[in-house]
Length: 253
Image 1 (tube, rainbow, N blue to C red):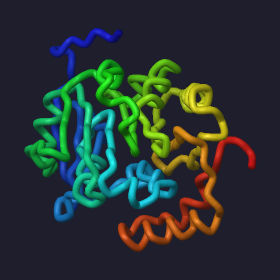
Image 2 (cartoon, one colour):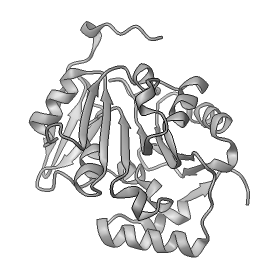
Image 3 (cartoon, rainbow, N blue to C red):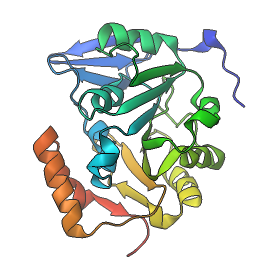
């Protein structure tokens, strides 16, 4: 079990560049962003890709479903799932300063019957019985202020993540780092979920690689995925049609 010293948590600040506000944890590394005029949209490409689970979920599992974020960041995914998808949202964040920043600078709404932010260590919190088997969309984006390696990245951690998911649920993970950890992380995810349940993107220009893992392996027909991608593109303006050229299953058909 990790021991967290609250006095060692990084300071939280923000910067602005034109129409965009950025969250930082005491370093120049960007931990999240917000379009100032459209605070519930998703601005960063890799964060849009974190929503790739929409390619697999029936609309009935989205509206009224449960989304969970491990790591609040600038609250982008939490706000989007809450406001745009009408999901119940739970975010787990260890740093009270990040929550304070999201409420003060990034338009995160207050907690209500559909929105809850839990201040806790994600690795410990997700082991609680109340969360098991309840999550349809799980977003894992856990980095410290140096953004070098995922904070939680063990086989045991990914097994706990799998236990959170409903039968139709899926997890997306942002794998990024100056150390070459991608292959090791992918191997751990595949060990837990099995290769036939794991998909990944080509990396973005910035080096973020998004990996998706399904609780129940499912490969829709190409036409069905294209239809879902077209719908996503029309609704949210993301290049979801291009996703299908860059997003592939780990195991061969």
